[in-house]
Length: 432
Image 1 (cartoon, rainbow, N blue to C red):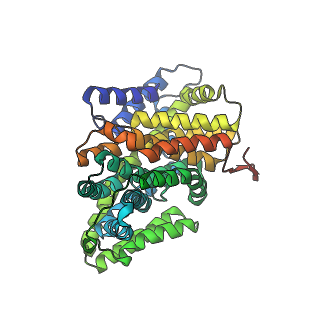
Image 2: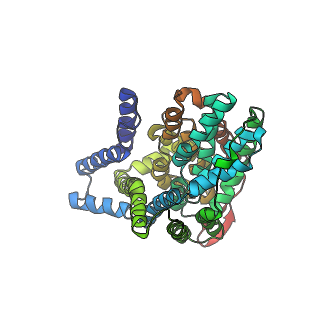
Image 3: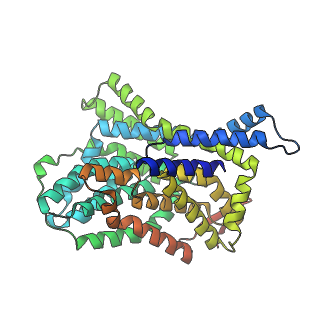
């Protein structure tokens, strides 16, 4: 019921005001927590805890090792985003991609730049706000359909939201399932690769030659260093906190050396990075406490029973996980929160039906990101529509990549590929 109340309030406030941001997610979660405490106090079973006991239970749930680690990684992601933007790394990545584009490959090129940029930045919203002005300029010069260009930018942005090593969704998916990022990356990349290829091919036939002023497309190799470091170190298996820490330090060093900010102002940039992610980090801890209370109330066991009552195999378990995280995402328009909420339940389902947690992490991230990429009231489409001056509903039909993510996500669940490794009692077996 606390979860149902949260989703109902969110949908109701959006429907009444027409704005998905009317009720902040942290306020919705707080209301759900208050309801959960009320339900716990009202529960009069033998051996019921007192209020102090419920507070302790809530704090232990929110203080779970995985959640606290996620808390600090989220803060690092925010710092990295602000440092990279402040020292010019974002514009360098974007300009380099545009400079390398053939004139007759603007649309597929714009999509691929969005993929690279979102993978590097780890934020779909940042990618949309960075690339949309370029997309609008291209559409104006070539006469291309503006909603189509918006759909291309949103699609590229969702690639990185799903795949980036520093994306909050990737962090949430891997930490809730307790798997390595590089393992999740390999499995997830194979699942979305066909969607990327088909999207590029479709866009080739939609492209119109566009002339861009290459003299304005300046870039600097040193400004690319933070992105190179975080990608290379993550692929080498270096812990995400160390990889992001090295990237942040390199970004600060380059920024100070080139005069983008002074040593004193660099501290302000770091502070801004913490502020931009502290809300998401706090929500992760709040959800952990909420899940602990719902577990005490029997809600987690009930939900598991309902989700798995007709499940007879690993494929059915994977489909139920995909459905759960998609519905949560469409209700909350926040793929990170939907993963954090569904993560513990998904882990229990995957363990019960011997599904690889790497596949579970991939499914959580893939379907939640795809949901955000087609939802008309999601932040990414709202931002693109606002910048372009078009309606959100006009963009959705052109979000081809997100639609294909759903298609190939289901296909790879049904065919059971790529197979993952299930760890059980110290032994490793291939998932069925």
